[in-house]
Amino acid sequence: MSQFNFIRRCHSCGAILQGEDAEKPGYIDPEVLGNLSAKVLFCNHCFAESKYNIAPRSPSADEDIALMLHDAEASDALIVYVVDLFSFENSFIPELTDIISGLPLLVLANKRDLLPSTASDDELCEYVAHRCRVASLACKAEDVMLVSLASDSDVSGIWEKIHQKRQGHDVYVIGASLAGKTQLVSSLLHNYSNPTEEAVASVVYPGTSSQVMQIPLDSSAYLYEIPGTSLDNNVISKLNAHGRAQIIPTKAVEATEMHLFPEQGFFLGALARVELLEGPKTEVNIYVSSKVDVVKTYGGDNEVKFFRRIDRGNLVPVAEKGTAPSDFDAFDIVVSEEGSRDIGIAGLGWFSFTGAKQKWRIYVLKGVGLYASRAKVKIHAHKAK
Ligand SMILES: Nc1nc2c(ncn2[C@@H]2O[C@H](COP(=O)(O)OP(=O)(O)O)[C@@H](O)[C@H]2O)c(=O)[nH]1
Ligand SMILES: [Mg+2]
Image (cartoon, rainbow, N blue to C red; front, side):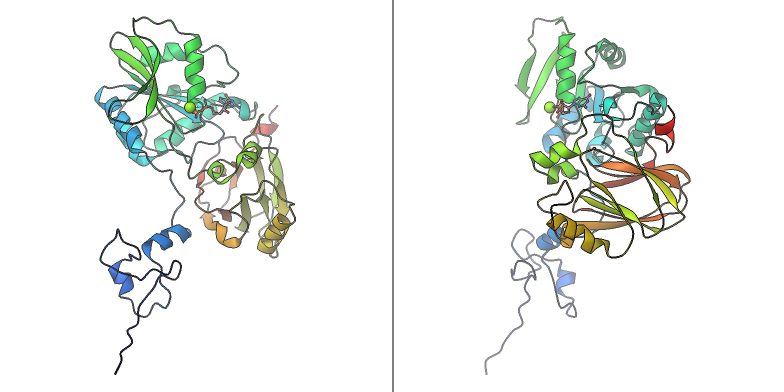
């Protein structure tokens, strides 16, 4: 008599599931495959593609950058870390910060012009240093300089700090893509006289296939501008050029104030949704580019309202892959700290409030990073002047 064997296949791609060869299609952990009571199974590849809520994402590390940073470590180089003050909290990459954690550090917190002028500079430096320490970099407020590289023409203070801190060693300029590294290097070159016979050049960094800018500092040391780290956990990576232009502010962000009772919340364009699930009436200040729609919600079925607005073209910006509930991750954040707090969404902005045991639910495009932190701009600072 013929025998029919039950073949288990991936519910998403249809590959025949197998637990032997991780390189071949249909691979699944053998213990999961052995679970006969599971009716629906996904191969590891499809599971990773469709996963929800495993953890807010870190950006991915690049091998060439790791190799360059190992050189920096071996030569006791100064690390000049350029960050975009508007949005840098999710850009640290543990594999890379581990390599440089023992090196001298100068953090250039760029795009100061995008933050309210009423925010205190001292508090911003302390905030940046704190976020660096959370990312395991030894950093004090004195190691942070607030700058607006696009508009400041005088970078002599930066050169001075670099020479003072590098102690004759090399300098590596690092940071996420779009933080302002190229802007920094071109501003530095305007204020540079070459003390050597060697030219400033764009070279292939030894042992890698990456092109880097190399500026001679003396007969044995260089400043290198190394490639930017990825923004793949940033909203920017989910948008086309038009959407990017909408989420990147062009002037200081102004707080949108809102008072929320439980069940109320807001949409941030078609890119994120925030709901106050539990807690007292809470005042929030929302900081996003002025081109992002901020819409208050009053409870009821926000999901239906959100996608209906998107369908009608009534909520901008919109991500192409952001028009169905399955395109979003959801996270619950319970705030246990008191004082001025922020919850931020990588690349899009943040909202601040006074911590009082609130429970928030945040929906973000899949793969976009979130953070909860002490406040970058204290809750009433924008009213100070
Ligand atoms: N608002 C503002 N934008 C800046 C500033 N510095 C750089 N940018 C912009 O940020 C973007 C990325 O700068 P770039 O130097 O190419 O970054 P890189 O990827 O780190 O090299 C460019 O569009 C710059 O015009 C600044 O101080 N303020
Ligand atoms: Mg660049």
